[in-house]
Picture: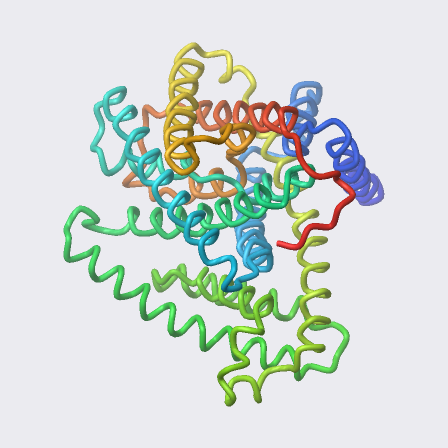
Length: 400
């Protein structure tokens, strides 16, 4: 392919994705469905395979890692912590944790019963399927009431973070031993301390950098720290989480005089927050666009037609709905569980974690079509949920 044609092709994808966003806001059809469908259609009609599937999978994996960093950063920049929101934050955290754990074990037992494989390995496959994608959900919440929007922003963000930490624990060695769980919790505690210190250093230097080009330097540092964490088996995503939380919650540190003195003032922070949110949103848009287009391209449509995929995939979705419905009714027994019940899309993190399952823990009999099926069905369910939503006008700018 000529370089000029390639540039035209890439530019066309970005423009198409932009119009998909506009179309999605007006029709409530999730952008992820439109992007994946475009990739699948291109694969179906394109007879001469321009890029090998091995290359496609590697690019998808790389984009997934970049997307993961952007997702955690975007989620943390949406978490504004105040005393008034303590109850809401705690409720969202408990909701994300319990739904994640119960869904993971329920799906793991289903896979164990179906394939007769070790339960721990089945749990590794079940965990990614139990994580709500904040990257897909948060941009779709404009028409909800402020209370429901806030709850879902916190819940999906916690689901991402807790799901990744739980998955990283599961793929370690001897995860069933209590001692290893204690060691992992100790590592997390150490990582929290290191992460807070590193995050403060990054915020300090971000305020000191006078060059106009500085945010991609920060992204590069965060990416390097993530890669180092992966190599040393430490939950380095916590650094990204705390970096975003500090940027978005400077008011929490005003009582600590030494810290307050060494980080940018409130006006500078507001400007940094505004710029960082803008750059993060733009970068996330690009990463998500190419990730889901290429992921759609990599999907073998014929796998979705296999009866095993449809039966097991449907059972997984039913489990997710039952667990979510039960907990939502427990939290608010007098409230209508819609649309929150259906707002549980699976997406980038689910796919990325599947790519990161170590070869010794992989289940040869597990049909990858089930992953595609669950992602597509939960995206359709989210669309149905948004159609049932009765909330604030989309033009309102709701602070979360």
